[in-house]
Amino acid sequence: MSNPFAEQIALAMAEVQAELAKAEAVQQELDGLTASATTKDRMATAKVGSQGQVVSLTFHTDAYRSMAPAELGKALTDLLNEARAAVGEQVAARLGGFDGLGETLRLSMTGGTELDDVLAPLYAMRPGADPAAAAQQRRADRQEEFRG
Image (tube, rainbow, N blue to C red):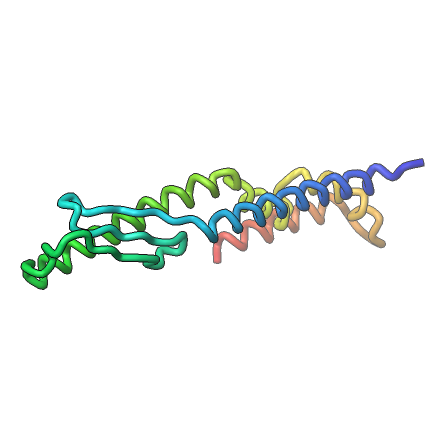
């Protein structure tokens, strides 16, 4: 005779393992992710990594030599911000597959999902347990969490 609770836990653990494997694959992909941007006048190109770190800054002309310091500073700032925005879009696209995962985990930790139904038999097995009172207390605890 199989235990349905054990089967549900096994299925949940399998889902968690699958999400973990997916997260590890995305992390490896993000580690090697870069994006580049080039100034409009083709004076320079900046390449940044997934954390926004500058990987390279290449000058293609010597036009920077005749620029005022403030003008050069603005050009480089704009260039780096453009490259960082490009890599940020790539990171967001890759992390999009995890949308809602954090909310699901948060709700399951606070008793706000179908996990309550799965755990209800265990709550009922505790000595002196009143399942209705336990559910009411979890709702009150959750409400208190949001009040600060």
